Length: 326
Ligand code: 8YV
Image (cartoon, rainbow, N blue to C red; front, top):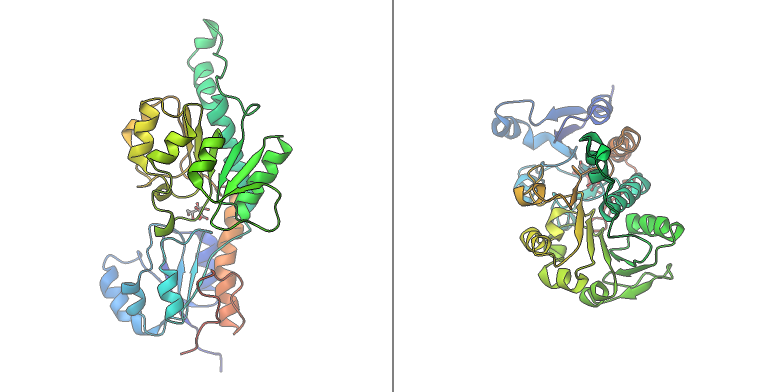
């Protein structure tokens, strides 16, 4: 007799590889398919053994996990998992997995693109050509350049290192701030973020979101970065104090900013939209078909490994233990 299929709760935006991959192996309950998600959840909660999260805005908090008494694993899309209470999950024997590594190079490409766009005004130059202005005058020289700058990495994890490697090739000096120095890099480590911000002209933010890094980039850090400074945020909107950034940009206390992430996505503050000298991306970090397919497949593969009784492929550090069986 065929083994009973495990019940999986699928939350978040529709992603074909995840939906189809799960449907082939599990009984899938898609939250959001139904108008009455609360009633649907109550009906299936006692049977759910796994949750798949296909991206924000889905939240997996203790209130939800408590409602799922047989929950063993949460497989989440994306390397960042600030929408999941992984600490609580770890304390309650629930494994959380994410999708690291497969997106490193794509996000690093985007980070360099955003940095170049911000320093050299490339998006503005495209607008200039399209508006017909070029027929009347030349595009102004960019007052910023990467040729006379040091980049301070805020975070030097897997993606941070991929960005730093690109900067090495571009002959741009790199230093970094993180809680602990990394053993395998030659870049100078700054235990103090303000001290690093004073010494560099670019802050490249690529650190996890969540409460530990909330508003890490505040007014004092921006002032230490100074009038020539460029802030690039590839991490999470929550890492930057957005009102403080808007004020610093408006008052010319930093040169410019390139932002891939915002506090309340997809809502971007009108003040930022009104500023021509900042560059705004719609959370593009990993956004190619190639890379997103690898991330989607890894969400499925983590659950297939669990279903086969194997260790999860890419657990988060808070939940390294194998999932409990109930
Ligand atoms: C995704 C990301 O765009 O992996 C992450 O943490 O921020 C991006 O790759 C995000 O998960 C939105 O779906």
